[in-house]
Length: 195
Image (cartoon, rainbow, N blue to C red):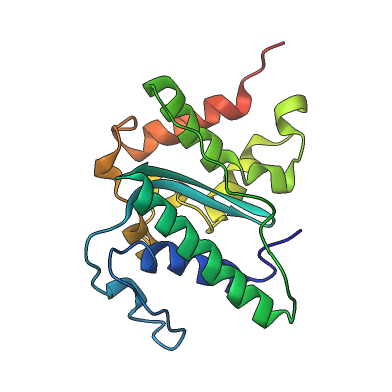
């Protein structure tokens, strides 16, 4: 089931990634559009290193400070989006199926892979079977990724956006010294053929 039906849904959830990531309780207001990214927060609950929003799911790469803070962040995020979505689309019941899943990244190789996995997830929108069949048009795929604004990929390739306040890149290893290294790494993933 889709959890984002419109650009407004995506944009609101993106703002929630920033607003609910605060030790203090934050009230979200759609009326403060221009100043939303300037709202001063206290201490963040988690450190966010990468994210992507897809039509029916999302991925977050977070560094937990402790289990309680992580649970509070996820609970606030999912509850707020569910209430908004149910009200907007006049529906009832749970929006998210089952519990959220988390995987502990316990080594550098896996953590670096997660950056690629998250940032390349939108490719499934235009080429659902790209991992199995390969990329048909690399140029078109890169152009699509560069225009896909519902994730942190653009923050890593050097685009200046207000949404980059969501991330704390300093909390994660510096795998990519510059945007070109990140683009090169992801291009290698896109063109890898294990046959």
